[in-house]
Amino acid sequence: MFSHVMVGVNNLEASKTFYDAVLGAIGIGPGVANKNRYFYMSPGGVFAITTPINGKPATSGNGSTVGFAVKSPEQANAWHAAGVANGGTTCEDPPGLRDKTYLAYLRDPDGNKLCALCRPS
Image (cartoon, rainbow, N blue to C red; front, side, top):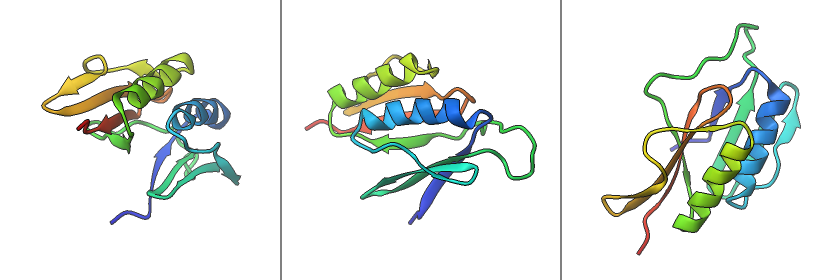
């Protein structure tokens, strides 16, 4: 359904450091530069970060969440730890099992809400 998901950021290089760490924790390579953007490629789609092209500050979407599929609770925990260590903040409940789904939530340095999700068997 989606070709890509892109979020706005205010400090492109600081955000690249954050996303290189959290996405690296789940096996996705470093962002590839293209003008004022970085693209993260995976077999399941593309995630991108950009400074807004209108020159105004990036803001997070109230009620918005970008979800990343992970393979295990351990990978979700590594994703979460990498995010906190690189400028992100935990939000919602701590990483854990909720209704047979393992979830870990973060906000990136610009306040974008992210989730790592897996369904353990």
